[in-house]
Length: 271
Image (cartoon, rainbow, N blue to C red; front, side, top):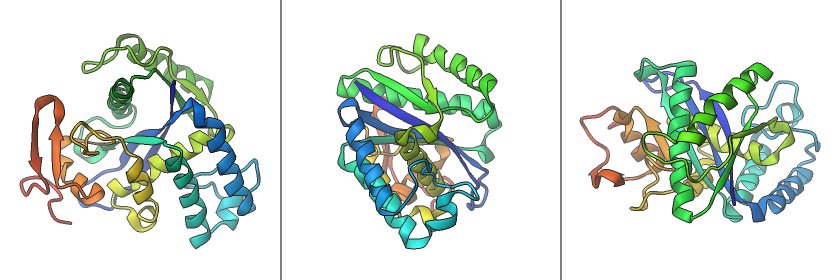
C-alpha cells in the first residue's frame, strides 16, 4: 500500500506574462516507512529546538515559532535535512502547476482541472509500481462546508476515473486531516510550495532546496520528469522543464513523440 500526502500552493510569479501559479502535489510514501519518517523528522526538529506542536511550513505564519526563531542558514539546513530524510527513505513526489495568466480557468475551476492532472499521475505511478494507494490531503481552510465540497468533488474521480485513467488504483475517496497533526503533510507542503516557486521564478529561496525535491519527482518511461513528476499547464510552457528541471527533451509517452528543449517557438525559450 502506498500513501500520497498532498497539499496545495499558490505562488506569485515574477516571470513576464505569467499569472499566479496554482499548485497541488506532494509525496508518495510506502506504509512501511511512515513511522520511521515521522521519527526522523521529529529528531531533526529537536536538534533545532522546534517545539513539538510547531507546524513545518514553507511560509510559516507570522508569530509562529519558526517565523520568529528559525532564520537564514538554520532554516535552510533544517528543511534540507527534512526533505533529505524523505528522499532517503524512498519517498517520491509529483506536483501540478497551473499558470492562471494563460487560461480562462482560474481559482476553483482551475483547481478542479489541477486535481484531474494530479489524480491521473497518481494513478499511473501506482499502476507502474503495482500498488494500491490512499490519498491524504490537508483539510481545506474554509471549514466543514469546504471540506465536504472537496470530498464530494474528488469522489467522482475515485469512482469513475478521468478521460485518461481508469478508477482501479485508488479504492477509497481522498481523506483530509489538518496538516499540523500530520508531519507527512507538512513535507508535502514543502515539496509543493518549493516546486511551484521554482515554476513561478521565485527561486531566491526555493533553489536552495529544489535539487532534493527534483530527485524525488517521478519519471515517465523515458526517464523524464517533465510532464510527469512536474506537470505545468498550459502545455505551451514546456520550456520551463528545461529551465526548472534542466531537461533537454520533452516527451509524450502515450503519443510516442518528443522534441528538444528549449523550443524557440514557445514562451521562455530564453530567461
